[in-house]
Image (cartoon, rainbow, N blue to C red; front, side, top):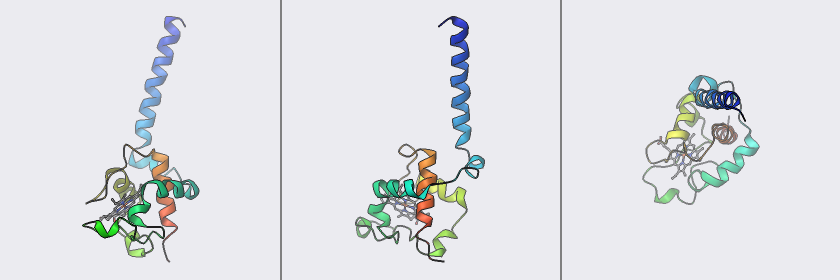
Length: 122
Ligand code: HEC
């Protein structure tokens, strides 16, 4: 690879990095859609122990926690905020809930959120 080509490729790497960074900004999230089927796998791997098999906040770890994990079957849970709010909770955590910024890819955050919404009753 000659020097010119290297510069081009390097530049593209930076451009891609910037795009990925901007891609996880709040405005871009609205354009992305979550896949509940993949979200189920993410949920079973990372969330089920607190939020429970039925998404009602009664996971096996729940009794030991200082705060009750959110109940996704309850419409009131979904009135706490907009999509950006929930994405932020999953990424950065809230109260005793850990953040998954380092663990989940942006797409996985959307996937698991779309799966959690399937628990909602009405
Ligand atoms: C260690 C237990 C624990 C784990 C693991 C956990 N959560 Fe939570 N989660 C909580 C608690 C506790 C709350 C309630 C926080 C509050 O009162 O605001 C919560 C709340 C939420 C909420 C609703 C917003 C809110 O503030 O109530 C969402 C959405 C959520 N969790 C998603 C997830 C997802 C997605 C995962 C897995 C990637 C996950 N949680 C893993 C404990 C957990």
